[in-house]
Amino acid sequence: MISLLSGCASMIAEGLARDLQQGIANQDDPAIVRAGAPAYMLLIDGNIQNNPDERGLLLAGARLYSTYASVFVKDTQRAKLLTSRARDYAQRAICLGQGELCKAKQTSFDKFVAVINKMTKSDIDALYIYATAWAGWVLANKDDWNAVADLPKIEAMMERVVMLDDGYQAGLAHVYLGVLKTRLPANLGGKPEQGKLHFERAIKLSKGRNLIAKVEFAKRYARLVFDRKLHDSLLNDVMSATPQYPGLTLSNVLAQQQARQLLDTAGDYF
Image 1: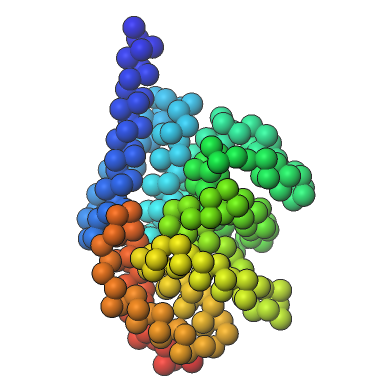
Image 2 (image 1 turned 30 degrees about the vertical axis):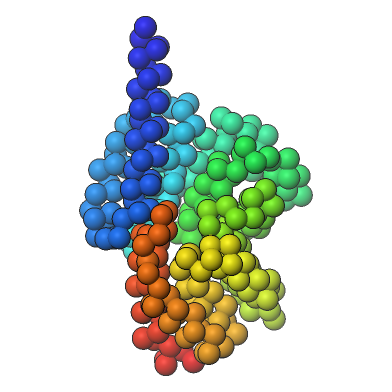
């Protein structure tokens, strides 16, 4: 009876975590999320402590901590702390469900990719959350070359995600790939033209509703190649769009805030 009650409690907690994620994604006031999310982060932490082997809870915790840190946390040390927890939760979930990938983290890049390429569509949520949490941790630790060296593995995971489901998360995996491939100009080893294709694909897959894809396209590619016309066109499209859309509302509202900042500073950049 006790184990049954424990299992029911775990299922309720996982359901709450899913509902919370949807509520955050569909919120059009970022200030509400900024103020309210920490309480739910503590709640998920408590549930994970009581149910340490529940993959759904671990993945929900990873997603929430990663999202909150990337969107709202500007303090470097705090970002490192929160993204570390996000990565830890995601890695624990991977180790519970995909033990081979868990072990492959410490192997060579080729062996890591070989394991990634065995992942199936049933693994896609865990794979994507692990990749995004890991990417957030790298960004928070960008002053550490050992952390930055992990980027090719993160890119390999995102490549596998789009291979398994090209339109996953309204093209967000393509946005990540676009960002990764435009980190450097072509003469320093970057692949901006490949990045451009990923941004364009994300926009097409979401029928233009994923506004962060256009913002990152302008910020990462158009600025990198000094294309002011493309830059302003993309950002003006974002500013004129309706941000409310299921699963994308918060992201779109934040995208519009970024678009305004990028347009305001365009004269100084170009």
